[in-house]
Length: 365
Image (cartoon, rainbow, N blue to C red; front, side):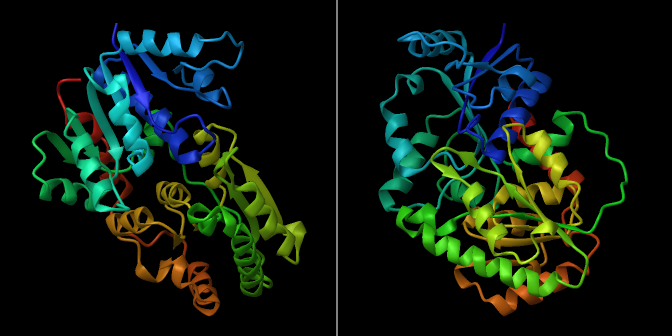
């Protein structure tokens, strides 16, 4: 029996992380002959029930100390610990990693991960020291791979891609040509709040102005809007930002909110209905790319720019939120609505082949 313990932010009602869980469990079974996949928790229960991932923290009943015992049990049974997807090595978490018994003797593998931005030289040093404990790393972006190469890390690592592009393969989805309605999907977030919890009002004001600018562009063009709440973690929830957009949009009959429920496959399918996507969140952009839907990427974090650069998104459809100008946005949105296909250089097939390197780039699973 091959058991793998999957580590990350999976199961916390964040679309990207939940996609990582689905893809990683599929990849480990398909390429590494895994029998059992384990992760910490699942707020929705969907990853556990639908995708057959076992949980350390169960919601069905509570017994004091049960999670601790299950964690020890699955840790003992696991062949490897798998860091699966995303920006996992922040400054605070690294300190916890160094002090945890879990990272002392087990084989450690990371796939679909990125490093940085580093908040200090010590953060960068700690990241490097922790990565040196690993047996294999699949980096999802050029910056992370080039950084590792410059540090001469003496372990196996590869330049791969974001795991989420493998979602259609993981669920065995058969692509078909469908007629899309005139619908713009928006993936919104409170980007100032992420840096300073006291600045939520600043985000709400920004979103209200964004809604008004959007209406001025589309009011006579027959488009409907879906707002996608892609992160619904109890510490951070996109619902409030979506509601702010809705409240400020003059024609509320043309707008609806879709809320991620823990199943990234369901969310991805919902986004397929859109003819165009405007996204602040990385995985709103990734899902648009998978669907080859025209995309306007509003960058709040370097990982968004890294993705745009890797797929070759036309620069006129990618700009930094820290330099936001309403007139520039309105012009970019107008140009977007004239497109019928996403403007990138990297084909989806090539991106998926690169993402598969996460699993194929290592032999001793």
